[in-house]
Structures are given as C-alpha cells and as structure tokens.
Image (tube, rainbow, N blue to C red; front, side, top):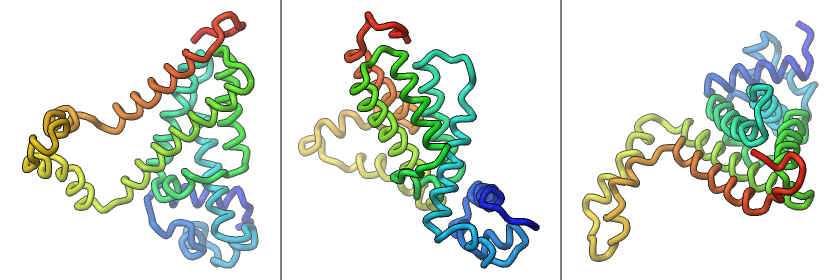
Length: 219
C-alpha cells in the first residue's frame, strides 16, 4: 500500500482507540497497516512527532463533534465535553498529549472556536486571550487526568474508588472534622459533576468580566 502521514495517523487513531499501551510503536503501526515498521519512520522524524500528529487529530475529532448553530456558551461547553470524551476514548494518547501543544490544524481549529465564542460573549481582546487559555488549560487538565485514569488496571481503579470510603471510616472527627462531616457528599461526586462545576466556575468568571454593552455579548 502507498503510505502517507494521513494514513499512518488514521492507523494510530484506530490503535489508540483500542487502548493499546504500545500503540505508537513502529511494530504496532506496521502490523495495523500491513507494512514493515521502518516505513512508518520515513514519514515522521520520531515518536514524538507522531504523537503530536495523533494528538492533533484527536482535537480535530473533538471540534468536528460540536454541532452547528449553537450559541457561544453552548458551543464552548460542547467543545469542552467533546475533548474530554475523545481523550478518554484514546486514553494513552490523550494522557500523553494533554500537556502538549500539537501545532496543527486540529489545535488551531479548537483555539479559533474558543476565541470566536469568547469574542461573541463580549470580552475584549486581552481578556479573550486570557480566558481562552484558562478554558483550554482547565479542559485539557481534566481530560488528561481522566485519560490517565482510564488506562489503569481495573483492580487499581477499584482500589482507588473504594479507598476514600474505607479510609474515611476510620478517621478521627476531632482531627479531621471537615473531612469526616463531608464524607457522604464527597462520595457522591463523579467526573461529570466535577467537569460541570469547573465549567460553571469558568462562566462565572467570564460573566464578571464581559462588557454587556458590546455587540454579541449575550450567552
């Protein structure tokens, strides 16, 4: 078959969706594509270059999931949730690229969508840039954490999920009064609720800064 960077990234995304730890090796991609592993590295300088290309594809996929016709706030909410969903669905790559700058069309499209949305809400140029970075860092940190958790062995996840309840049951209320008082509420929190709370805090900060007299300053 005739290889291209696009075809290799397609294959890498398929492998990443299977949550294979060594999915970006020449061996794994050679097997997926039915070619010699050396062929992969004729198109990418090294594994990091391939990782960034695959990470950029994930961002492009997240942008493509955002429905057309949404108002600015709903559009950015949808983008945030799509990034988390795509990263968790490709967990080894998602965890690895969450702190990286992919410098490709996927990242550019995501940043453009955020900047345009924040402009529409009524922020001035400096605030648009600051809040875009705030939103990106918040979402990528959450997405990377959830992707990293997704690749843990099930017995490790089970242990972590049970640890707080087990540990808190033995804590002294005199030493940890707030912690023991809040155990029932802490146990009810889940990843989606946390993401909702992060986004709500973001919007409260945006609304406190936005100029309501500017055009397109509504939600």
